Amino acid sequence: MKRVTDNVSVYMYAGEMAASRIALHAVGKVENDKPVAVFGDSLSAIRSILAEHSNSRPKLLRDTLEITHAVQKQFSLVWGPGSIKVIKVGRLHKVQFM
Image 1: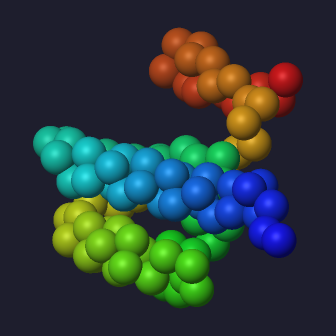
Image 2: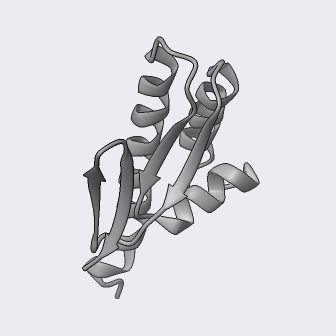
């Protein structure tokens, strides 16, 4: 018998990949030339994007990669655990672990 929780991490991964895809699409619409950082708390999703490989969601990854290759701007994918807080101090941004 398969437990309901066996697929929870797969669903969470798919959600994080979809969120990354939406964020990268938004990066492409930014009209200035400044580099952009996309923060995410799913290390596995970021690793899949960087490695350009996913066993569980290859079509979602392919769609995400098409967006990353189409973005004509410098961007970084940044992992941060869900328990961080980004604080703006003047023109600087600090990351604070909670």
